Image 1 (tube, rainbow, N blue to C red):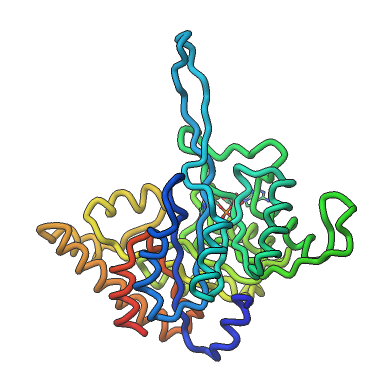
Image 2 (cartoon, rainbow, N blue to C red):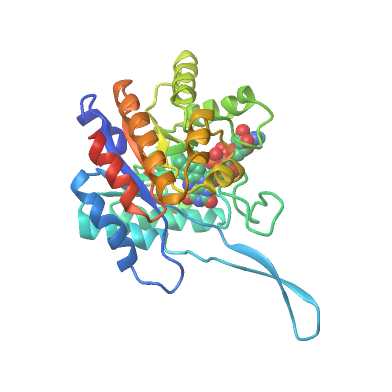
Length: 317
Ligand code: FAD
């Protein structure tokens, strides 16, 4: 079922969902099931599976010359989605990236998804490869999520890269990423917002936000969207802080602020066990408030660690 229909059918009740990463290449699916099993009692209507571009690094060859090597450490997004749907009978939402894929490969991936009965996709530009200074588009691929979104919307209208598919229409519900605290490459919130609006005007059906620890950022963002005629569901993305190191790492990696009260509380902890409690408590309060203000779904970035998410969701739902 489409995420927009799940939200509609919930009649204003906030839903619970989460995302996880595909396993490292060569690992089995059991690790994924172990991460999902504890969360199934919370009835997620959908589960996201991220997609990761290849890493790039230099390897010294026998002749002493350096050669650039690229490989995907965590392939398998589509197969993991199929395994999840098969086992749990819930919707699986694959993340689709510009980076690492040509337009042809994207088209074939979308055809596979249609055959698998997958109704939703989250379209993203993708992060830069490890080892690259910034995002480098794949030759023959897309540069921005707007372009990838257009490709999916085109297929929903029966328009393919080549004419031979004309009569076959897909029917994907398409999600996009949003950044209440601005995407780090955008010069300012206004410019970033204009591109977000472009994605919505092109046909995005829902958005999922970057994580945030201050609900005011979400509130202001939703207000700004509604004032600018953006009326699609805005799903908050959430991650509990669980280690002291994350005070530095989360802002560095995800370009977000940690509120002073939270960082003070973390700094007062004697060890990570205490930090975990502080982080979980903070997130429980955040979630209760988000529910009150009508967030359609609370979507957790579990990173394969179900326990904190389970505790939070059990306290909130
Ligand atoms: P875009 O919408 O393309 O925006 C990128 C930048 O370009 C922004 O600064 C924007 O303002 C600007 N911009 C946008 N459109 C245009 C345009 N047409 N012309 C000029 N500038 C433009 N990464 C992964 O690798 N795998 C994942 O599975 C993944 N899942 C994610 C899930 C969520 C919910 C979120 C919030 C992020 C996720 N990311 C993932 C990270 C994401 O790929 C990065 O943040 C990436 O840097 C930007 O992706 P985007 O889709 O927002 O890009």
